[in-house]
Length: 96
Image: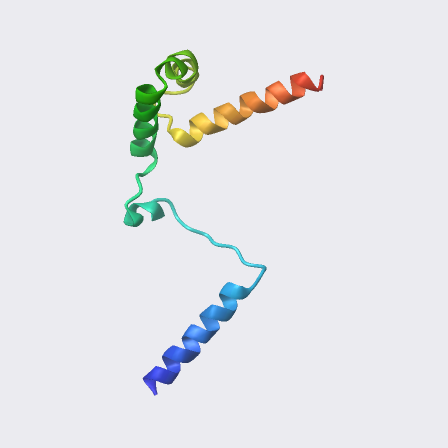
């Protein structure tokens, strides 16, 4: 009987996963169990990698960009800031 319940449960889950109208809500830290770094360690790793592999780009662009942000910022803040600059550049280019 338990095996039938497991098969039925698996079948229902499979049907839900096939649905084209679905949303996934995952909480902060879900990547931690997958051994992916959380925001601040990821930020430190990206900064270190950029500095090591593209020192001039890091010093000319990344450092001044990060200095515009609060000291407690992480990678999402930096990317949002870059996105803001990209939007401003696009509007300027299109004279909007």
